[in-house]
View 1 (cartoon, rainbow, N blue to C red):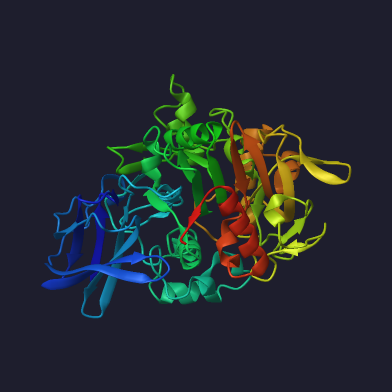
View 2 (view 1 turned 30 degrees about the horizontal axis):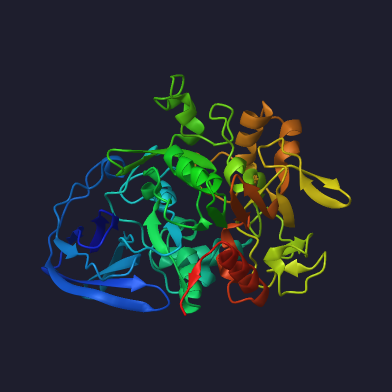
Length: 482
């Protein structure tokens, strides 16, 4: 048995990261590996092992373990994601930390979606999907969040009507939630691709965005994969950055669907979701901080304002009970700068073979103008957003979804109740079928681009997906090595 976690999970050169581990081995080995274009081992040591109890309520208060050892962060280590591999015989577990940039910074910042990982973490107690409302980051992540042998083999969007892939994961000891959250699913794929091509950026974690002005020295902010849970402080930082002339690239989907709060000095993520009336700030002068959908009238700050799109007008694709479509985007505006170098025509499909449109997708209310889709603006999407590509998507009703948990309520039911006023067949029908939307718009002095899907990173390596991604990154000022 071996498990562990690091704190702080975001550090700078010259600081120290503590590793908290529990194992029945007398000694266990620790390797720290920066994961970029390739794995680079930067630290190795043997730490004394001890069994540390898993306390009741660990999901809320953390493990409270004693540190097993310390990892000094060398000032020469590049900003990046550092995997901590713990080994005791043939037993292996992973932890992580991110090294932030020092005084010399790159032009862009990739923020890994640690607040979303926390929401899905069911190590030691319920996640936000099985009845929990508080998630401590002072505990291990389940197996598969940080490392897995073949992410593409077990990606959610490839899972259709058979349980075989999921059963294989379970038999290997992987968490059922490890296809829905974690570094190994999306960010790692993007980072491997980008750094191999000489692209350079700095790294941070979700709660780093709580610091006012954290993005001020950058030209671009990057979100990748499944970036579902955002605090008000995170949104304030990104939206202020863009208004002031920064650029935001959302290679992600289901982005900022739920509001959360960081509490306990940033170690705890709070999210009441459907149980919003149980949230202590509900009905107070802090009601806008209620940890439910950003689009909920109680909050009144739809994520469309930041990203241009929302899961409430998108949904699932290439999943059970959802449209399969082509797996790619039908292109509406081939003349857009994002498609430069591709010689596309209207109606061409981008990203079909690798299935980029999945598994959770964001869209917007739209209508046709001169035969092409444009936003209506009624849902918060800027009317200036150019809709570049679309693909069919569908919100699940409770009885349509695969078995997720005994308390699962379909997003369609919840969206109908909260945004449509009633969970009735008529209201559900108005939200049931949406679209994944790829688009871009200006916001203040800055620019925003969204791919509108979680699985864009699985398309990297495809010529069209690569070209679009490079066009976005270069236009937004992401630096490349000479």
